[in-house]
Image (tube, rainbow, N blue to C red):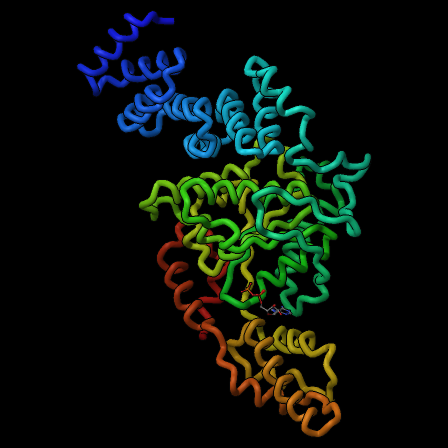
Length: 457
Ligand code: ADP
C-alpha cells in the first residue's frame, strides 16, 4: 500500500491529467484500500463518467458505498453487473453485503452462496457467519421424488412467498375443458408444456427437458390469459399472473429487482406457470429504446429466462402474452426462452358457440340455439362474448326481480345483448398484423398468420 506521500503524489498526478482513466482508477483503488471512502467514491464516480460501462469501476464504486453503509446506492451501482449471468463472483459477495445491510438476508444468502460455489476463493468467513445458516435454496424446490421430474404441487399447502414480489401465487381451478374451441392451440400447448412434465422419461430419452417458454399472441380478448390459467390447472401447477404493475417501477433498478423477485417466486412454487401479460412492454426490441435503463430490464428478463444454471428454471413454464409480437426483441426467440410462438386466433363460429355454451353453463337456461348467436357475432372474441352473456344476464335478473321468480335465459336474450355489445378491434388487429406479415416477415416468424391475414375481415 502507498504511504501518505505516495498517495499525495498520485492525487496530484490525477489532478493534472483528469482524462487519464487508468490513473484515476488506480487512485480510486488506493483511496479505497486506505479507507478514504468518500474520496474513493468521488474518484470512482469521476472514472465512471469516463468509462460508464467499466465493470471494475462499478464494483469499486459499489464497494465504496457498502463500506459507507449506503447499501441502496451500492445495489443500484451493482444492478447492471448482476444483470448479466456470468458476473464476477466478487460482485456477488459485494451484493450479498449490500443486501444484508438492507436486511434482505434470504437474497444475501443466495448471492453469497452462489458466488462462493463459483469461486471458493471469494469466501468471507465474517460475512458467512452473519448470514448464519444457509438460506432456503434460492430456486428452492424440494428434491423431486425418484422417478418423477417434480414434486407434486402441494395443493393444500400455502404458497411460498418471496420478498419484493407483488404478484400472487394462485391455484387455478380451470383446465382445458374450460377453454372452448381452440383445439389446435390446446394441442400445441399440450405437446410443448404438458407432455414433458407428464412423461419426463420419454422426453429425457430424447435429451429434452421440461421448461422454457411459449409466446401466446393474437388479438386482445381472444383468451390468452384464460388459456394460460387453464394450462396451469391442467398441469396441477401453481399459477403466477404477472401484470405490468408488478414489474415496472419509476426508480432505476427497481423494475429489474421486481422481475427477479417474480421469477424467484415462481421457482419457489414450482411446478409453476409464470404468466406475463402484455409482455411486449417488458421485452421490447432494444433497438427501439432510447433509455439505457429500459434496455437493462430487457437484459434482465433474458438473464432470468436463461437462469443462473441449467436447472434454475426447471419446472418453471413461462407463458407470455402479447397483442404485438412484432415488438418483442428477437433475442427472446432463442432456444429456451420464449422460443415457441403460438397464435391464439379469434374464434370461428363453432368456437364462438362453444364459448357461449361454456359461459352459460351454470345459468338457468331455456332451450338454447348457441349456433344462431354465433352466426351473428362475427368478429367477436371470447372477451366480447363474455360481455354479451353478462349483459343478457343483467337484463334477465332485472326481469326476474320484477316478476318475483327466476326467468331462464333464452336465445333472443343473447341475440338482443349481442346487438348492444361492440366487438373489440379484431379487424384493426388483423390490418396491423397484415402489415407486419407482408412487409417484415423475412425470418418467416409470422408464417402461421399468413392464412389469417389473407382472409377477409
Ligand atoms: P386475452 O388475455 O387474450 O386478452 P382473456 O383470456 O382475458 O383474453 O379473455 C377474456 C375472457 O373471455 C376470459 O376471462 C374468458 O371468460 C373468456 N374467454 C376467452 N376465450 C375463451 C374460451 N376459448 N373459452 C371460454 N372462455 C373464453
